[in-house]
Length: 115
Image (cartoon, rainbow, N blue to C red):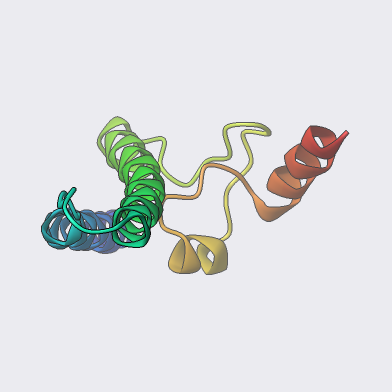
């Protein structure tokens, strides 16, 4: 991949990373720690916290994928499918710059995981 494309993807990855970190900070503010009130209030707070925790877990996973993609940019292996060693099409990288696999290989993995 040429340098201009690599820099474009690096910039998009860094922007996505910064967005996630900002979102995680905002989510922290919404955690409900109030244990006062009736059982419905406490249960509602616990459910809200659980939902935010799961969202945060997904964000953390995405953040890890972004960091791995940035390492690949530095190593010169960005845009190469980890399963097939084929080039990941630009259309896929434009949609998901942290993609580890070609669409075909990702679908193959998903099918085998369902079994």
